[in-house]
Length: 255
Image (cartoon, rainbow, N blue to C red; front, side):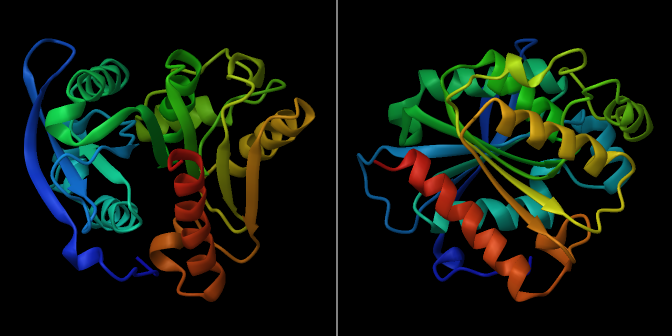
């Protein structure tokens, strides 16, 4: 991670908290709490979306999604900024995202969260599931999307091709920007040198359609950034975009 926030090392982590998956069997999630959080506090929460089946992810990378450095680093940044962050495991990406959101809504007191202020964060191949969640879960207040695969629009097929190649879910297939809630704010960061096939072509159409619909979208283009610049491109621009992401989430969720 190219940006570090003071207080990240003081974030409290409740590891492997169990929630019922969509099939009724338990799944683990990690809950990251702000350093200044007190007993009885209820903080807004940001869920880090997992768009791949975790068993396959773990087989390929040797770790669960919630254990990789990119996720733990972002979760700590989100928590250090004053929000609760949740990273979770899954078996079926779409159904288990719904399951974790349902669990958060039903267990606000024990988890120390405000169930009326939930946002999502996603990057890369997790983007299509995040957009699908915005379409289906109207309780979500905002979404931050970094270098995301998005929607195939105007005859494009790049997202579908990438989903087949990289095995992330694409529940937004056949959907358009008009299926998104018109008033839910989104933060979208683009990497000008993104090397992932078809990503920017789809993202450019997505952003143009969102602007044409006059949706509340905050868009930033990192002209020199590669894919996952927040992790690998050590530059002031990368750091400013990471900070802007956190500012956006706070602005939308903390009132």
